[in-house]
Structures are given as structure tokens and as C-alpha cells.
Amino acid sequence: MRVVVSPHLINGTFRVPASKSHTIRRLLIAALSNGVSTIDYPLDSLDACSCVAVCRALGASIIEERGFDAECPNPPDADGRRLIRYTARGVGTALAAPSEPLDVGNSGTTLFLALAIAALGTGPVTFTGDEQIRRRSAAPLLAALAGLGVWTQAADNGCAPITIQGPFTGGRVRLECPTSQYLSALLLAAPLAKKGVVIEIDVPLLNEKPYIELTLSYLDSQGIVYEKAPDFSYFRLYGGHSYTPMNGPVPADFSSAAFPACIAAITGGPLSLPSLDPADAQGDKLMFDMLAHMGCTVNWTEQGVSVSRNRPLRGGVFDLNATPDLLPIMAVAASYAEGETALVNVAHARIKETDRIAVMATELGKLGICCAERPDALIIQGGKVRGGEVDGHGDHRVVMALAVAALGASGPVSIDSAEAASVTYPSFLRSIAGEHACG
Image 1 (cartoon, one colour):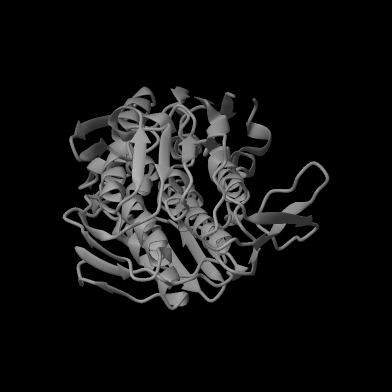
Image 2 (cartoon, one colour; image 1 turned 90 degrees about the horizontal axis):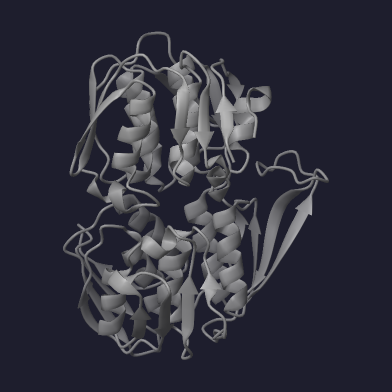
């Protein structure tokens, strides 16, 4: 699908959806719990649907409830109803072993976390996904699982289709984590191994540390006993635990909030983003600190946050190691800033849905912005963004970032593969484009 976004101003209130990271973790914990969970206001997106499908295939019962709830941030369906709740009955570790491969779609989070969870069962489970997923390597995670007694089989370079067969027998393994999802997978699964199983993990490399803090917050809430080094370079986990049901609303998503926040940075705002909690463990809340450094006014209240700008944006140097998902939208903000902006220490942005360093350099170049690639960085020279035709490369964050870039451009921007935004934020393009968009 091709969407055309024309330059225009946006201000007022912008509702952001629930966190993908929280939604998927809650669904998986609910599926592994002994009881019934009620997950309110979960994310309604393709990635979340992929996780629900995997949980169901592994034996959990998940019922969705839709209704007319104006407070729910999910987009309405054709009848005006919104997804307001999942009710999930877990199966503990008595996981099913489906005969057909489980398709995770485009959801890397679902794939990596579910690989370790499937090892809690004793039957073989095969995972596959779309073309992008089949290019994303799970090799370090698979090597760690094999070292813990799990049988694994994968395509070249540890890519899907991947087959897993447990159980965990324990041991000590080394796990390099260019993506934090490898470690989160073991942290979520290992405590549910059989009693007496001890799993030790040495972590010589860890990117995206805030996502590990998020995962650990769930272990803490479940009363899971574990040991860790202060710098997260070592973990010791003990089998024999069980999960209790997950209840309550899912927090709003800081990764998604970064896009409307950048709209305010480009067009001036003000934009209010309700329901964001600055105490949440999501690392992408750092976007607001970065925008403040660039010259925006950021005000936090009990209701959420507002962003505005009444002076020119300025460039700077930003370390994105903990927040690689911010690279596409920060590259757009940098395009409108005075001087040079360097997004550094973020080589792992190259192993997301796309090589986001290369893709953003190419697509912003089509809009008149000079970018330079480094192995672990993107350097952007601020300038005048012009209209034109760009390719979203089927990457949801690239599509949304380019749509935001269009709002301050000198002319309309036509974006190909725009349907990819539905992976995490189905209502975004409608929210910003309105009558300015065409498919």
C-alpha cells in the first residue's frame, strides 16, 4: 500500500497504544500461568495477534473482548468496537506440541521469547515467520539453549524455520546479546524448568539493557528468585517456580509515543500524550530527554506529557545503544535540526526488521537530507526536507518515521509498503494523515 502524506500542522491530544513489549510479555506469562488472567487495554496490532496465535497453539485459551469503550486507545473495528480485554487461561508448563509450524508473522519479540518458552515442553515445536523474520538470526540464543540441554534445529545462520524440543537440563552458558530478546527469552523461561535445574548465563555483550530491566520487573512481580551481577553480565536462575495470573491494564507504549513527540518537535505542537508513566521501565522514554536536549519543551504531569517547540531544533550526539528502536524517528528529528546530529553506538539497529541505519540514510537522502553511515552510527546533516517518493521497506518504524518527516516537508511524501505500520501502531497513519492520505 502506498500512502501520501502532505505537510500540515498537528496539535492537541494524541492517544498512543499500549506497549508491545508489555503486551507480549503479559500474554506469554498468562499462557504459562496456573489460572485465569485478565489483560486490560492490550495492544491491538499484528505483532500482538501473532503472540496470541502462538499462545493458543501452545495450549492456552485466550478470549478477546471488544466493546464501545472511548477510553481504550485501540482503533475501532468496522462496527465501532475496540479490543478492550484478553481473558487468558494458562496451561502452566503442560505445553502442546502443534504438528504445524507456528507463524509469528513479523514479530521478532514473539519469535525469540517463544523459542525458549517452547523448550519448557517435551514435544517438538517449529516456528516460522515472514520474509524479514526468516532473515533474523537466533543463533546465539539457539546455542545457549543447546548448552542447556534443549534440542534445536534451524535454517542457515540460525534463522527460521526453527524447531525446539525440551526440556531444560541446566548448566552454564555464554550468551552474547546484540538484541536483548535473547536474554529476556531465557529469563522468562528458565524459572519454570523442573525443580532442581539450575541455569547460569554469562552475558559478555548486552545491548538494549532497559528491556532486561522490564523483563526482570515481571520476574520480581511474580516472586521469582534469581541472582545477577550489577552490570547484568551474569545471571543464575533456579527451576521449580510457577507463574500466577497477570491482571490489570497494559501501560502505554513509549516506543510508539516517540512518533507523535517528534511531530511536536517538527511542527511546534503543542501535543499532549496522556497515560504515559515516566516511572515505567521502558527505555524509549529517553526520547523525551533527547528532544529536550534538541530544544523542545517537555512537561510531565500526572496525566502524561506534553511536547512543544518555539525555537529551532539543534543537533547533538545521542547514544542509542539502549534505545535502538528510536533510530528511525531520531533521524527524522535530526533532519530538521540545525547542524550535525550523530546517532551512535547502535550497530544493532542493522539487525532489526531492516538495516535501519542504511535504510534511513537512503530514504532521507531521497528527501534531500545528507546522511553518512558508520558501522555503528548514522550522521545526519540538518537541512530542508523536500517532498518525494520513498520506500518504507516493510518496516513499521521506518514507515512511521517517514510519515512524520512529511509533515514539515516542502511538498507531499509518498511512502510505499505503508501497511507495515499495522505491526505495532495500526491507527498511526490515519491519526496523522486524515484527508491528506490516499492508498
